[in-house]
Image (tube, rainbow, N blue to C red; front, top):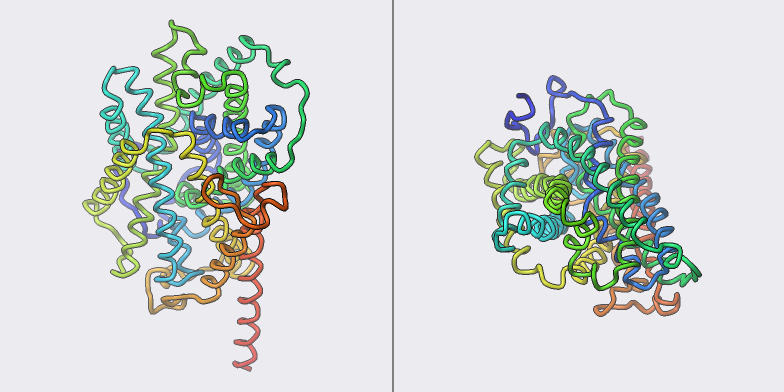
Length: 459
């Protein structure tokens, strides 16, 4: 079976002879990655922060629609370049300079992988009656195994998980709507605009933090695949899946409150009744599995990209590849076991933290690909510190630091830090918008000026 054959590639470019597939596979993969329990938890956060349930659903739709645009634009980079997402950053930041965003992305992957292990492990523990910590480790090990097999099996599993997710969430949505008076829950929809903006940032951050993943899952597609096709298949899957799951989570928290918080898996399966307890637990565990595998798959390539910047290696042996996956798997399992208490509160802080650091990277990366270099890259130079992209790139690093700094006055991480401008805006957090717009504009301006100076010198 081709899907069960071990993947041979890692951080090296995919040759034309190995390119295959159709971008519609990206729809099922990203639909499955979003149609799962963590998405529902993120939707619950929109009500938890104090937004009326009806406006929370509006924030879910708007945040995913906005955040899904840069996310899907990253997807189109995969077929054109044939390399993992984060190694592309060397073209903007320099081979050594890219280590800065790479380290932060490693933290992101570990955090999401750990959170996935917590929720998936809860479901496995209820099915098998294993201790929760043991179930978490089993879930992490199974995720690592799929990541070791690699790209083809991940896409195949995404198709199966998408079909299962639709069946499960249709059933659970009907049970939620039919078993509660949602009319009363959605009545008198008062709008607290600052809290609405906070909910919007939470849902947008969900999509924006997928940026480092996306080209990893599209890099085997033929280079002739159009940007438009890659964008829309990815955008449709990720936005539709997230809106459905998050809206479900927002309504579930609105009707259940404390019965949902901290007991997310138990509450969801409880909607199905005792007869369907085991099938629903299994569906939740499998539904979460897709994105959990993507976390460890992207995590190992990001760790490898970080370390090989100094060794100049472009190809990993199978032993090294398995070793990197094992390292990420073990770390993610340990973090999950140690940090599973107060999961919901820790998760919202984690989302906020990531948003401040990942949006500037995304902005610079997309501007460079679409507006500066216009899809034309020297792939050999990406692996060579002495190549055309150099060790360090001042324009990208300066734009990145500015992108982080400009967010600080407008940031609002409850209980940790509130910037001076956030109270002026009623507590609203608009920092992610600035982080998405300003660093890209700075980078574009500097690079165009540099190009004009270089042209003048050569004439």
